[in-house]
Image 1 (tube, rainbow, N blue to C red):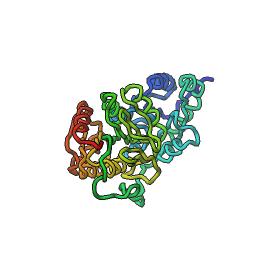
Image 2 (cartoon, rainbow, N blue to C red; image 1 turned 90 degrees about the horizontal axis):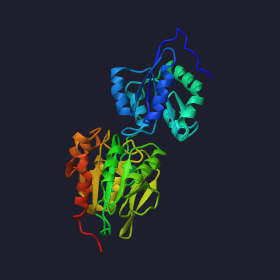
Image 3 (tube, rainbow, N blue to C red; image 1 turned 120 degrees about the vertical axis):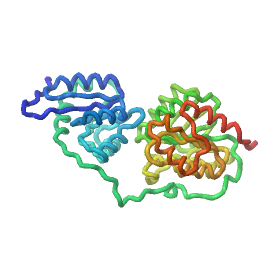
Image 4 (cartoon, rainbow, N blue to C red; image 1 turned 180 degrees about the vertical axis):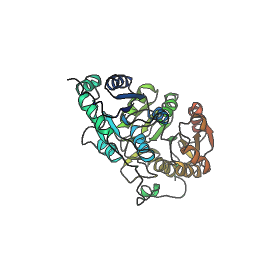
Length: 366
């Protein structure tokens, strides 16, 4: 079936395709540029898209959700809050009726199309008419600026894990490294974890990502790292040579099991506007591991993790922040530094070495 021709009276439509797949960008660019009155710009990730939007504002954005540096849901939320325009989500994780699709619509997307995990090119060719009609309809939409509900309180870690004074009663048998990251954190985490040796201390990670994305993210890291990397499951032990990634839309905490530690994966309200929250993870580490832990706060918008890192430092844990020069967004580290929660500010390229150095200093229980 041939794509429908655009009427000469129809205003031109400029579409920006934001997708980290070169195959998708190439196909979309070819398809859209062939349509009368339609032009296209492509971007491999949201940060590139934001720069290009400053030069030429598109009429419609065609957006993937799983991307490096900034995930699509965060980008969608930012666009709709700062400079709203029609966004069509096209993602393998956003089938009709899924939680991800509903969330995208709630965040302001005008339509959600499912993109299969296999056969993307064939899928796009077969559904080009639907895709083009959706883009044309989206161009007529007039989305409004999205505002945060002032009635919703901004909760602290107290909403999930009450604060407890003092240090852990017993020394652990192993050291633990807790890492928190947001925008830009996927690349930063890859660089850190890939540099660690196979006998690195056990690691727990909160990376702000939508639900369903964290398992795929952990699988990719597991293939490129010497240590094992996987999405955390409630009750998993924290062991040497392994990193556990918090599942999207779940809080991750560290629990004590004798001299050893396990993770707790739990529901709960948004903390510091996030679930999982770095503040929740860091508080749990402060309470269960204390001076035998290392906390690391990486690139990201906002201040999630700054309070929790301060609590870790107060219990004697070593604390590290990524420096401004190597951050994609110097928000979370900046807030932690401002609170006096950071022992050492380190360039991304040196964080792995700093972690190993600090975990080698504290005596452990026999």
